[in-house]
Structure formats: C-alpha cells, structure tokens
Length: 561
Image (cartoon, rainbow, N blue to C red):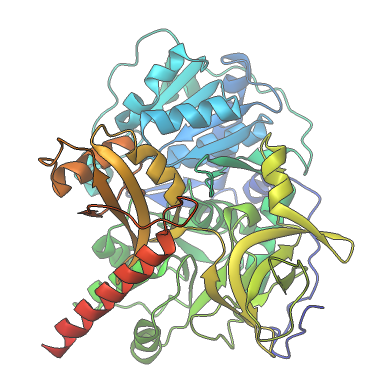
C-alpha cells in the first residue's frame, strides 16, 4: 500500500478533480476574462489573450479550409520557442487535430520517422529548419507551412533575438509550401469542432531500450490532469508571471511555459533559446514570479546573476526536474537568494508533473511525494511484488496524467503496463525507494538511459545511428557525469581495419549531422575491443562504471592540485 506522508502540503486536496473541458476552453475563457491582458511577451512585443484567441480561430480556419485538416489528424510542429509555436499549437487543438512536437535539433531522418509513424500530413516549420522537413513533401506530407522568428516584431524586437534567428522570411514558393503569415490573412471561416476531453491532443515521442521512438498518446484530459495538479500544488494563480525558457517541444516547456499560463490566465515571458544574461534581465524587468527549468539552466542563471547588481525579489518559485539539483547549488540558492528549488519528477508518459516535493518542506535530491490522485508503488521488477519502505525496486505509478498508451504500438504497451491490486500501473523503468515519510528517492535505472540537461537519451537509439558510419565495427554508448549537464553521452568505439585515420573530432562532427545534438556523443574514445558476456552482449554497465571511476579519480586529482 502507498505510504501516507505526514508532510502533505497544507490546503492541497489529496485527490484531483480534472476539469471536463479541453485546453481550447481555457484560451477562450481567458480571452473573455482578461481580453487585454498580456498572454505572451516575446522580443519586445506583447500578445493579448484577445489577439491569441482571434488568431487561433483564423489559423484553425485555414487548417480546415485551406489544408483539409480534420478532427483527429496529426500535425508536425518543428520550431524553437516563439509566438508562432504557441499559435500553431492552439490552432491545431481548436481544429481537433493533435500536435506532434519535434525537437528543432532533429535531423531529416528523425523528422521523417516522426511524420511517417504519426501519419502527419501537415507540417509547420521555422524557415531555418525547412531543410529537415521540405523533403517530406514527396513522402506523404501534403503541406508544409513556414514561419520566421522575426515576423510580427519591431526592429528592436528583431535585434533582441539571437543573431541566427533574425532573418526575414524568404519567398515561400513551391507545390505544398505555404507562408504562415499569408495563411492567416487568407484564412477561411472556422467551423467549430465538437471537442472531447479524451481527444488526442499531443503526441510527443520518446525512445526506449529498442532504439525506436514511440509516440505517447496524451489527451486534453491527461495534459490537464498534470497541469492543474501542478498549479494547485505550487499555489499558482492568474497574476503569476512565468519565465518560459525550457523548449516547448519538450513536456517541461510545453506544460510550464504554454499550458500552465494558458490554464491560469497568467502571463508568460518567453525566450527563444537559453541566454542566461537575457533571462536575468527579463526576470528583473517583468517581475517574473515563477520559473520551471532543469538544474543546469538554474545554475547558469544564478552564476550570471551573481556578477552584477540585480533585483530578483519577485521570483518566488523555482521548480523543475530531469536531474537532481546539486547539494552545493541548492544551499547557495537558499543562503544567497532565499529560494528553494522545488524538485519534481515526471516523464513524457505522464505529461511531466507526477511527483513533487512540498514547497514548504522539500528534501534535496529527492523525487518528492506522489501528488494529488497519484498512486506510486515500489515493486520487485522480477516478481512484480510490492516492496516495503526503504527497499529499492522499480517505481510504478498510476494517475489521471498517465498517457493513454503508446501510439499504435501494442507490444510496447504490454511491456509498459502491469496490473497491481486490480489497477493498471505504468512501469517507469526507474529504480527508487520510498522512505517512512512518503518521499521517493531515485537510486538507479532499470532501463538503460542517459539524462543530459533534462533530455532523455537512449543509448540503443544512438548506437543504431553510430553503426551507420562506415568505419565503425562496434559501438557502446554510456553515461558519464557532467557538472553542467548532469550526464553526458560518451561513445566507446571499435574501428574496422583500415580506418585508423578517423579522429575523435571528425566522428563527433559526423554524429551531430546524423542526430539531434543532445543525443550525439560529446566524448569519443577508440578502443581495441569491447568486453562481452558469454552470450556475446556488450557489457555496457561494466564500461560505464569503469569510466565513471576514471572521471571521479580525475576530478579528485584536479581538486587536490
């Protein structure tokens, strides 16, 4: 049975009542309640809730009348953070479609897989990322709609963007190609769609031990369950000002920088990509009150904040997950800035928010308590029997935010779900324990996985790509500690005869052309052979432990010197 914590947050109900509405309902409600309030601040411009609601209706009309999008269709969205991302996301939901969010770091082959597996026939893409999507027009995608980050901005706003994002929109010409701005102007009448809370809303992809990415089916209901639980747990409200920096394609960013302010009727101050100096400036200028980010961003932010006088007194909530906050950094935040980092735990499969530390009584480097309506147990992964307090086992969970299942993948669903006490539980693959006060602590991973700056990297997927290089005989991808990123990707490689001239730098550069940069190895070592088990399997865990010991010795030597 689950442990009942004596430190449950005061005033927070133990069970969650999920609203029987859709995300679009919240946009229309906010537009009625706060029509002239800033919904989004980006690059020196504000978008009000009224403007957001009107523009999403217009774009939803174009989706229907111009592109033939129907209820239940999937739409690929490839872009960095920008108002266009928000507009496209909400317009797709209004039209009854589901969004397939894709990392802007994805390669053409990765985008091809997402489009083909999801069955998306329409794609929205930022102009700088068009080469990763344009070829799909001949492969099942019927329409590609292009935007530029600089559109709709003043000269001052354009100048505030990173230099690589300041380009103007080039002429959009060719069969199946459309301009987002022109589409808004030429939009036809929007025909209201009968939406249900159980309609598919978002289809984010996550990989796994097989190396094949899987789509996580999230309805409006599962997304809202996670989102509403988070705002109640943390005491957020309509007057919150939220810093939106985490990438919107990722559940941390999508939930906290898009869906959270939307459902609250709050304001999000958005950055297109991470810039610590600019982030400090925006927090001070707009009196930001809440910010969700992985520990690596938080560390970078406060390193820069410490270099100049600044007023960060408005910031009262720092939250996030994906990696443990280092003890020394947590102590610095508390002592110098009076802030506690509210560590939480969630997965793409749970729409982010699942566990969290009570804001008033957190434990450091802790997954926190199972939140409202969430039932989490620790089981023996071999016997499937529940384990007592203090013993390490696999963390399994159920709650309203757990996905409906993997997209068209019954085998993956059979492996991912189990029955316990007559209920369906999701197997996270994380090894953890629960203490006598109901707090959960990560101890290891049952699944072979790397978390780099909050992004999940699956070694099997990376290895599959590395074997495409003509010089590689064998490859093993492991995790090594990284003070900034938590973990980083390292590849141990055996070269084929005759390829000794290949350098580590050349291989890293090649890898970054083949896969999203956060997946690509940052460290490479060529070795004469890889250790194997009696059945011929590469002993990755042994290699990982050996490398981590080497890294620890080197760090100790640096400290001693």
